[in-house]
Length: 185
Length: 185
Image (cartoon, rainbow over all chains, first blue to last red; front, side):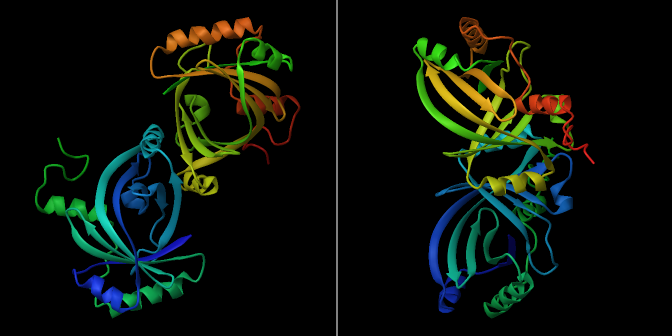
């Protein structure tokens, strides 16, 4: 499954704008995302991601492949629901993967046809809107849909970096002692 | 969790012997086990295993660490229940793991106190008994229990090889064109 996705910073008025489009509010989720890196190929370099997401309705293991274009975050995404995320974390560590950081956020999800709009309040970063459509095919056309929607909502520049990368940058800027990850004394 | 485990070949009279000990029949399971190897460290050499097991009541991802002693198959075992084993297989392949073989068996499970006895009818190999106890600690003592039980049941030599290794050996002996795995034309 290809996830056609775009992300941009937004203001608190975005909820109003989304509902004005005719979108339906779906639910509120609280995410704890644990990211892993590989010891044999640095996922920052290969533009991949491996993540355990823990939320109210259960946990999932997700792999994301390299992004497929320059304007959006469109990429292969594979997700399997798992029970016992703690055990899955141990399995990944035994297999040589290294926990590389954690992102916590509150997500309010809306649907508009086949499009999902997620307003994310990310701890340490602020407010973002992600617009996504999952596609088996025709992802180029769906990419145009979500770029149009982004324009319509008057959002700023598209951000292709992950929340994890943005958190690292934010820590670097304020000289946080934990950053960059893995290089602190 | 440490899995203290022993395996030996047995005859069809083993069911009678197990029930005569006072064990309770638990259930019959049909297993399809898909094994994976790592591209960066050969699990045959490191004595590890990574497996997706699909059975009637769902699927599990299991990692097994190197065996801890010479007489039994005692080792670290981590298991996480998963939904959608096909997606998990794709995730493992994207992460660089390679499907290395499949084992199909019918397992009849008995319990005797904290001990599990599993009579496995393995496709292409025949009948085996596995005796196992899961232990957080004291695994040396539990190891003695299952060795005594094995003697009591009059079983033959303890087999430390996996069904996958035994299947490979069997294919080699009969000059099966598929063996050894990955080296056929």
